Length: 67
Image (cartoon, rainbow, N blue to C red; front, side, top):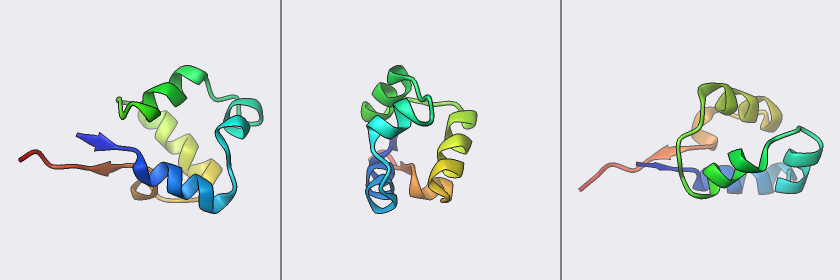
């Protein structure tokens, strides 16, 4: 299972809001909805987020191992 919990913390630290992602960086609301629901995203989306936030993938997503 994936968790995008690190994304929200990284965005807060970098001063990037969801509003800015949509209006400044042209992110779709559907992509943000998928992130909020911990659904899958494309590697392209992950790369774009890394570039916008100047961070590494582990600053955006973490893997939660099943029990």
